[in-house]
Image (cartoon, rainbow over all chains, first blue to last red; front, side):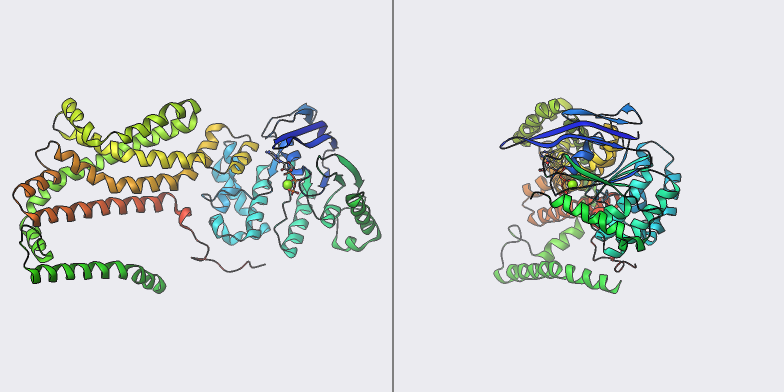
Length: 251
Length: 266
Ligand SMILES: Nc1ncnc2c1ncn2[C@@H]1O[C@H](COP(=O)(O)OP(=O)(O)OP(=O)(O)O)[C@@H](O)[C@H]1O
Ligand SMILES: [Mg+2]
């Protein structure tokens, strides 16, 4: 099992007392699986990622990766935060090579690799530009590139395409699928788009409003490679329907 | 390019014009009222005196500049060190910060005699006084910059497994650069002034000495010459700091409009 979350719990202090954000979440993710998390805004999705990435220690529960306990330990995942968090003092390429630099790897090689990947993200003309000169969508693509460059076998993507226009969004989605078919990675993916979740995932997990619990999950059995035509297929629409109903259940 | 020249002109013209106008009014006023030269000389008189005392001025400028620059550099060095220490340890922060504030409430005029008692009439006490007046704005603004780094950037770096010193080097330090330089700009305007005041309290050469002597001989025109020189060099120091800031943190001066490469291509 690539990743196991076991009875995860997290709360924060709030003016009205303790606010429970994660409430006994159990989730298992297989090697190479693409799992999307959907749930209402503020339910605790980003918090879940904070726990898995080791940035926060859960109040209760365990996180295991490849069988070993990584609860509260950093450096095991490629994490793309919801905000792009590009460093204003680094050019696009320098931002992309951040993880390599943290790991003390050869800077020059990392930059060359980043430069090779730039065209995929439509950033080839902006290698030496500072983030202040990029548009919102370009910033998000640069952040995605940085995540890819971080090179861990488990990716946590927190709404990586939230700020993209529809066209770029589709392009990056297809690119992501293509990359994953070549270099299998395990992906946990937060999105607010049911379409996107179904199109990309092997499994979609629906979370409850805060505190987050697993409300239900659905395996997406559409064959791979995925194509845009599948989006109008019966199976796709049924999956969407099911997820939509689950999300809006007892409201 | 053309637009840039135009902008330069648009930004530069008003101050130049106001200064010219001011000098003109001054000159006219002095001539019309016939006020005594030792009370208020006309700009033309000051210019003439400038030319007369050119060599004297040069001889007195050099030591002052030396004190100002050395003191400034020392002040910045100490300021950086203190800022990093304060940032790294909450204990030191609580220990040092009140002392820092305290150091600024003690008037320099009161400290200077002590420094002269301890270190004599040479270069050192003056350098120390300049350092004393310049380090404070730099510490305060640098500490501000170091501690206001975006916590989300820090978290991102930590998620990559970064150590604390890497977080410092890759996020806190670059983030603090612009504030560090704003502190330095304030300090730069104090530097020459600090040196001049230090010279008042005991020196054999320097612009401060030149000032006192001019005053003693009722040479108001020379006082104005000294003021002009002090202002000039303060501005030069300030300009150098601005250049250094642009060189060290070019990204802080970017604005999208400046060279917006057009909308996205795809
Ligand atoms: N560090 C914190 N301290 C206190 N409360 C927090 C903290 N982080 C998150 N919360 C609270 O936890 C809840 C869940 O936040 P989280 O960011 O995980 O939501 P989310 O599901 O990612 O929402 P969105 O879809 O809008 O991004 C929110 O109510 C938020 O106020
Ligand atoms: Mg979120």
